[in-house]
Length: 150
Image (tube, rainbow, N blue to C red; front, side):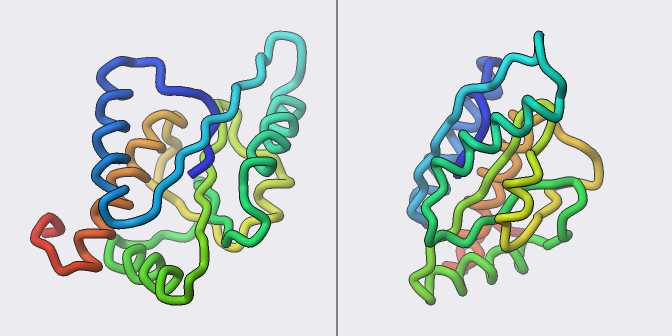
C-alpha cells in the first residue's frame, strides 16, 4: 500500500495501525507513506502531479496497481477477497495507492490496472486508508473462511 501522508488524528492513526496489523496476518502488507506536497504556492493539478511521482516511485514495476478513486469499480467484500486470492494464487504482487487531499494525478490513474471505489462519496485520504485496511483484513477472513465477515 502506498499512501500520501501520515494520519494526523490520534484515534484514526490508532485504528489504521490496528487494521493494518490485522490485515498483515493474511496478506504480505508493506505500507509506504510519501510526503504530502504543500499546496500553498501551486495549483491542485501540480500538487497531484508531484505526489503522483512520489507514489509511483514506491510501486514495484511488476505489481498490479489498484488505485482508490471515486470513479472506480464497486466491489463487495467477497469480490474484493476473490480478487486478492486470485492474485496471491498467481504469485502476483498487488499495490494499492491512495492519493492525497487533492486526489490522484493522471499518471497514477493511467498506470493502474484497476480503479476501486471505496464508498459512493468522497473520503478524506486518511479515512480511505482506514477503510482499505479494514477491507484487506475482512478479505483475509473471507479467504480463510473465518467468522469476521457477516
